[in-house]
Every structure is written in structure tokens, then in C-alpha cells.
Length: 278
Figure 1: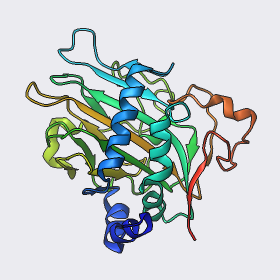
Figure 2 (figure 1 turned 90 degrees about the vertical axis):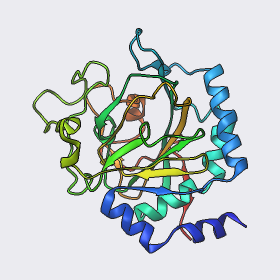
Figure 3 (figure 1 turned 90 degrees about the horizontal axis):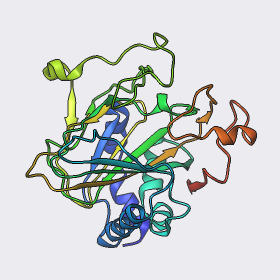
Figure 4 (figure 1 turned 45 degrees about the vertical axis):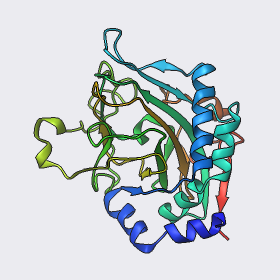
């Protein structure tokens, strides 16, 4: 089956409507064995040769470990091949209803077994240097993921384009927007039944696609959970523009301000267009 045939089989009006309604969709067995192996090799390469963005995102006394790395696709040939040759960019374009899918950045997330560090509820876009509504991120595990340790979402929380206060994951510091300038995220875990939480148990080959304003988070991993290695790749659509900040964004893209004016499309070699509609 060709790549176009795979995409045509997967992208349905029902899937697009679900993405627009919930802000997150699970696509079962989107990736084939070769694509999963590409990511496996890419993650191995990333862990062996971490970038300057690499960080440990868990406490020193954690029984496990949560690590992250960003923006390594230009030096990691496996990631680059996956980004350019997998169906993800095209599917993102359809879900965003955009004529293009522009790469924003890649993101490695690894939680070892028995990691206590949670990923707090948050939106992605307030950490960034962009504005616009046509956005799509993929969360792609190469290990089985239990329902307990999967990424969860608040269905529909992206609608209305409401931005909520971004905070540092480990100490809740307001390092981006000033204190009081945005509405706070509600304490979802105090009363989970009050929120439309969705999430999926996943196998290698499954992917989750979500809007950058959809509230999401995850638990740690349990002692009997396997290692959770995840590759995430983020795409931008037609209406996304450069919105430089006076603070350091995450990831830090402040260097592009010399090349892209405020309000201009993210037209830069570091953000290539991966897919265009015919």
C-alpha cells in the first residue's frame, strides 16, 4: 500500500470531526514496523548523544526517571527520515484543515518504570512563540502504554482558544507569562469525575494527535509498567504566525526573531514545510 493510500484510508470525515470536537484523537496502528523501528533507532541515537536541550524532568529522589530532549531532528537521521516519510505530516494537515504541514519541533519523552514524576495538566501553545489555531502534535509511543500511564486529555478544552497559565512542571513557577496575566488551570485531579477526561491504552504503531491548546497531562509509571519511550512531533498549519516573547520560550526559538518578523508565517529553514495539499 502506498503512503497516499494509507492516508486516504485513515483520514475520514469522522476522524476530522472528532479532532475538532475533542481536540485529541487516537489512530490505531497508523505506523508500520519499519516506521516504528526508525523511531526506535532514533531514540537510541538521541539517548546516546543528547542535545544541549536534554534535561532530567524528575526529582533526584524519584524511584524512576523522566527525561526530555528537544529539536534534534536535524542531527538525528532517523528522526528526520521519519518526519519526512511517515504519514504524520499529511494527517496533521488534514486534521488541521490546512494546505500545509510545517514542522515546528520534535520532542523526546522517556519515563522509566516506577517514575513518580507526573506530567501536570497543561496546554502546549502558551509555552511557545506562536499564535494561530491550526496546530497538531503527535504523541507516539514505541513501547506498550497502560491506561494508567498514558497521556490524558480534557475533551474540548481547546475550543474557544482560551489560553491558561503555563507553569514549570517541577516547581510550578510562572516562567513565561507574568503571574495573574492568564487564567489558572483548574485542579483537575481533585475531582477527575467533573471533567471529560479521555485517554487510551496504546501499543507500538498507535499514535495520538492533539491540538496545542488541548489540556493534557499524565501520571507517572508504576513498578510493573515497562519503560515508556515516546517521540512527539509538532506541526503548524496555514494560520500560525510568529509571536516573539520577552521571555525564553520552551523550546527557546528567540534566535529566529532576526529572520521572522512578528505576525509573519514561520517561514524558516528550522521549520520546513513537510507536506502540501495537492
